[in-house]
Length: 525
Image (cartoon, rainbow, N blue to C red; front, side, top):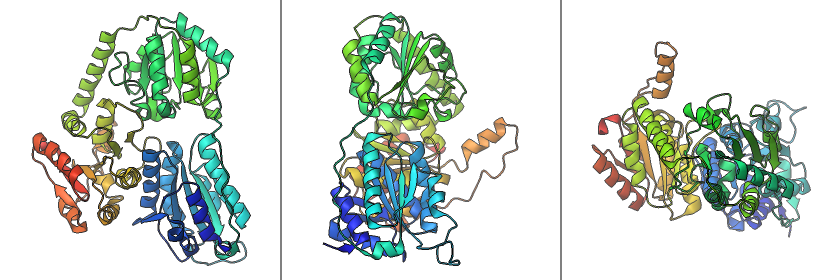
């Protein structure tokens, strides 16, 4: 059956398993909206394209399925580029589809015109392509969904000229893509198993790329008696009661010394990026093995690996678990426990009061809660000091580090997981980047607690200025009455005056029939 291409694309996405699209319609992309309801897809109207992008990101992180967003030509695409950059840095599968002008070289002064829209988008995503025909659009959609399951997942952008979107087109059924990720070879696995057997102080470093392999990772750790570290994105891979896990302590300066005592280090699914280490070197001196699905990571000479393995983390760890034998190492559980306790005390001393408040918040969460946090000191402390019982449940703008992430991403995550619990954590300044998306949560009746940490300033930046011997400047702004602001949208609000009241407010918010802003200041202690 022939339909306008925009409608056909929606049907194709539905056949690909897409049930939700986030976006904003405009005069240039109306044909994309012709087929959404007919295809049986739910459309979530964001208040800003940046919010739509973060919602798609949060949906993808919470569900494991690609997040999809529709935006218009020009400013619509520009507005979603920040979420695309965030999804790129954090390996999130997201498909952004936009309209584009039919001709930009010979005709100037058009509505939403850019010099090179496709190229602009390509700077913040895996690839950006223009589909000039219906067949090209279908092929690019297939390519995007295929790569989501056969390579490192990252955002893609497809733009379609306005005239092509409105032209009649035959339907193209989506192709079935069988996941075919690279796997480690037997000789590599055998060599690593032999190295681990001979090691006295083996260490595994797990990143977000190994989050889907927690069971296999835990089996390997139990057999090898190896110590472990995780990146923030990898928290929860090691068992929460693993006595030899140093947790997300890579950013602690002392971790370099500890890793320097290891004689065999295996890093799985981690970039070992600046935001993982906050130093130039991992600190290892013994044999170093690096395992990753992304070839560029294996070509990173900074860490100077002795062996590189191109493999999916799950396949690698499953194969290794079959080969390693039980044994003893020189690691001491009391040493690890004392180190973690000392690190938490140091973090608390550096940012007084936050640890105590964060502990109450995290302890009040129902089992399996998905947490979405923003760039704020409350989140920094929380994710540094909190252990997770499973990976993939604390979502943060790790790499790109954008403000305004938590609220819209939590909305997207909540839409994706339905009745399962979701919470957002934001700071007073970053919250105002995307506060308008609170209207979406109210419209949809989402039971979503929002912890709003208000220290009245850009405290992290102020601290940075002071540490750099710069007189603090431009770090304070006039804040609204956040509780009244939330209520103006029809949301609930609470301003607990002590920790017991904070715990009660969180419990109540999960049971509410809409979002609840929970206003927290340092004075709560």
